[in-house]
Length: 221
Image (tube, rainbow, N blue to C red; front, side, top):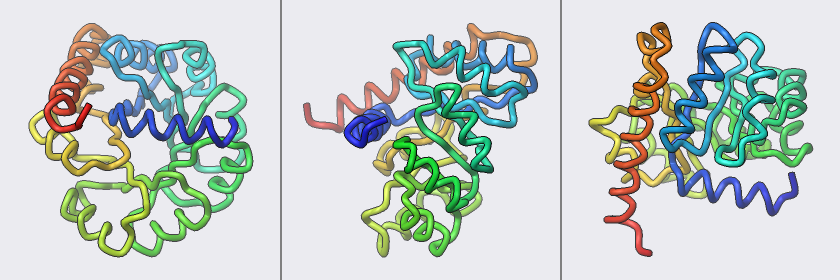
C-alpha cells in the first residue's frame, strides 16, 4: 500500500471512528460476526489472530468493497506476514513489538501497536506506529488517562481499546481520538453463542446512527 493510501486509510478510520474487533472460537462465527457488523454500517473490521483460521476469514472478507479489513492480536512478524498475505490492510497488536511495527511499515501498511505507559507509547510511536492503541484503556484510567497523555504527546494518534458502551459512546467521540475498538458492546458473547447475527447487526447499526447524529451536530460540514 503506497504512503498516500495509508494516509487516506487513517483519515477514513478517523472519520468513521468505529472498528469492530472480532474474537470468536471458530472461523465460521468470525466471518458471520464480521459480516453482521459490516451490514450494520461498520466500515472497519479487525479479525484477531486468536480466531482459528484467522487468515482465511481475512481473505474471505478482503474482497468486500464496503469494508476495510485488518488483523488484530498480531504478536510476531510471521503472523504479520500471514495477515498481509491474506489481505489485511492494517496490523493491530496488544503490545509494542518494534520488529512487527518496522516490518508493517516496510510493507507500506498501517501499524497500530498497543501500549500502556508513556515510555511504551513513545517508543511505539518512534518505531513507526501510525496510531497507538491504548490498551487496556478503561483499566488505565480511560478518558482522563488520554487527556493526561495529550499534554506531553499531543502529536500522537490514539486508538481507544476498552470501556466503550452505548451509554458513554458520545464521551468517547468527544475525545476526538483516531478511533475506538468495539468488542463486547456489539459482539456480545451470548449473541455469538446463539449465532444471532441479526441482533449483532442491529447493535452495530445503533452505534453508527449515534455516531452520525453526533458528527452532524458537532463537526462542521
